[in-house]
Image (cartoon, rainbow, N blue to C red; front, top):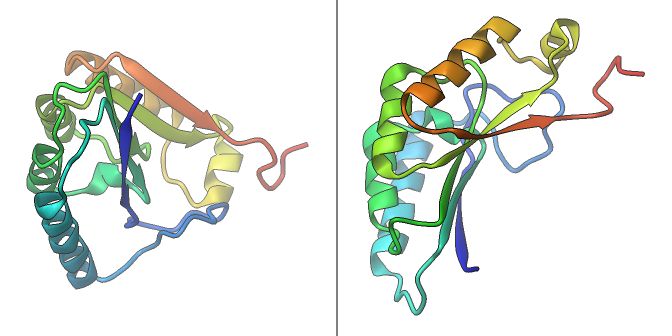
Length: 159
């Protein structure tokens, strides 16, 4: 199965455990990155059709809705067998989630990392179990039923 991975290396905050090439960068750098990525997708000579799409990061769930529509609209093969967007808990809103579904996102990978609130705080994250419950409801209401939850073993303070 052929797929495409699009990296969005921008975050609202850098989590303490993260070693990915991502971070909090000036908005101007993000604008230039989106422009370059848009240009690359427009000019790429597609010799194959992606069957899957994966938007990872960073935190693609904070990507501007219009930018997301533009980028996804440039990837051929829609409807894909699966289109995934990585999301950080606390970044989902009804408008964003509806926009993802309208763009063809069929799966969301939530970077939960832990359900233990002391561990969550040590990672620098700002969500609660109640936040997750509300956000899972938003996804279901938008028709995105395929949800992955990432958990990390070995966070500071775990035994």
